[in-house]
Image (cartoon, rainbow, N blue to C red; front, side, top):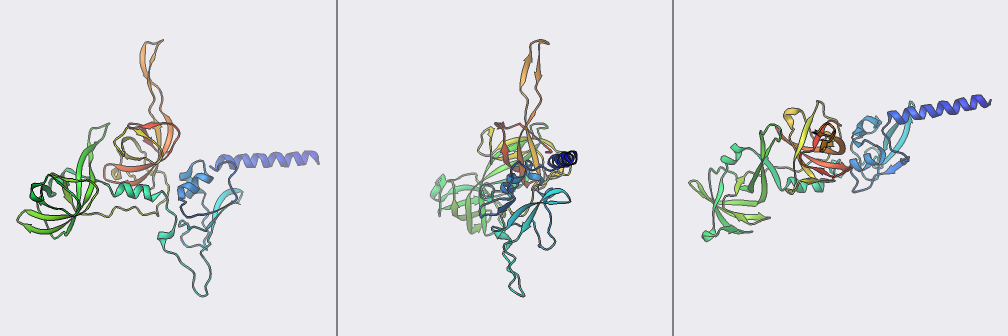
Length: 338
């Protein structure tokens, strides 16, 4: 009897060890968690998983719930075992029968994957343009009464080809994003300065009024059609389909140090197969040290030091949000498949 009991205990221990090895769960995770307003999918993933981007792989889809990937405040997430494997399930707090209808909330009420306030604030200030877009865009030539700078509600003049577009965004052209490995120009940073509406057009010169300014408008600022750049919340963590090896080209703010929730520019984009939601591991470049025995310089191996989630892709580059940083990161650190 004693041997049988010991055998059962040993078997259970082995089973749990196998489950722990297969499942990327943290230690001491809650059996249930009630989703709160302000949560993000990444927050909840980190609560349960060592590798948060594996969320879709351990999610048990309840066929009775339509679109279970949309999660709302008040929903209950439970840790259960199905066929001996740990899984997370969802219990809707909002599927209340009102016979014969079901209470429905709009998708906008679902919790986002990432902190959208951080990302949308960045997207509202920046865009990536090409040299052709810049060359073909109108530009500010003078302020009212020959002023050099223009502020909110001021009148100013721009020159270029104007169509039926009634309003434009005002942009200050910044430095190009250059691939540090190939020296290819991947795009040019355009910083949002404000907005303006067209009052009159005489040949190739338009009179405009500044309707929004975040900085003073200067001669040479470019006018580009507005584009909708707010990020939707309904995309999910995933690994890239192809093999990705790239670097962090720049960090928002013009600094070189990179930390948690910083927006970074990556030298890989749609042509390499990146899509919004892809997770990349950040590897800290190894230091170059002197081998005093061999009397030569050597480079130490790179070490994994964080994670970045891609949230906006362009043809040749992408923007990502640093989701974790185990040690100080920097421009030129490596990114690759997790």
